Amino acid sequence: AQSVTQLGSHVSVSEGALVLLRCNYSSSVPPYLFWYVQYPNQGLQLLLKYTTGATLVKGINGFEAEFKKSETSFHLTKPSAHMSDAAEYFCAVSPYNQAGTALIFGKGTTLSVSS
Amino acid sequence: DAGITQSPRHKVTETGTPVTLRCHQTENHRYMYWYRQDPGHGLRLIHYSYGVKDTDKGEVSDGYSVSRSKTEDFLLTLESATSSQTSVYFCAISRDSGRDGELFFGEGSRLTVL
Image 1 (tube, each protein chain N blue to C red):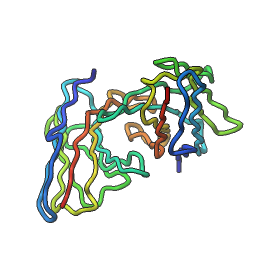
Image 2: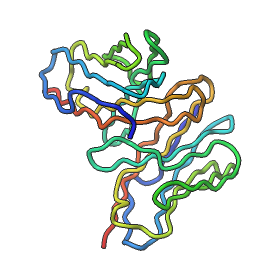
Image 3: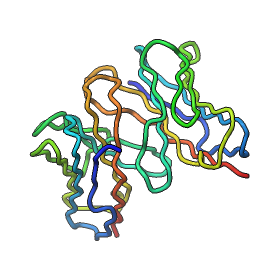
């Protein structure tokens, strides 16, 4: 079965510092991977996704993630944190065995940004 | 923004009472999903639908039922609410049947069962 593990339930950074949120996946076939963001009292929105092709994926708000098959990882990074990046971030994987089934989400990482 | 409306947005009820949450979409997307979000658990799939009258169970379906009589509406019913069903419920939709179909989320319905 496919799954994702997000390392660290809380990450705190200073404004302007590098953001690194870690995600490792488990899959017996090439995975499709996603990062979603949830701002307080809102639903989730897509930050970026990897399906095939280039392993470095750029998303909205300056975020990017790199698919590393050898490490089974899909870590999310941003060079310089902004106060508005404070939110909860979810890594997700798409099941391979049935079309239309929903994404499988990690437990989330809360990002705090201090001034 | 995707046209997804969840109702009610907030509800407090008592143990043993029935509860129905409604998800309404204006995007004409085929796929609809109900997730629950709980601290330490992330999002877990309850049920999903791949068309009118076509539904299937997710990871945490016990105690929940769903119905989809129209493309635009997906109802989640708790026949007899329990305190363990206190949660935030999210509806999501997607257009594509492929693995890379992006999910669009509603704003959530916060349910408290006393």
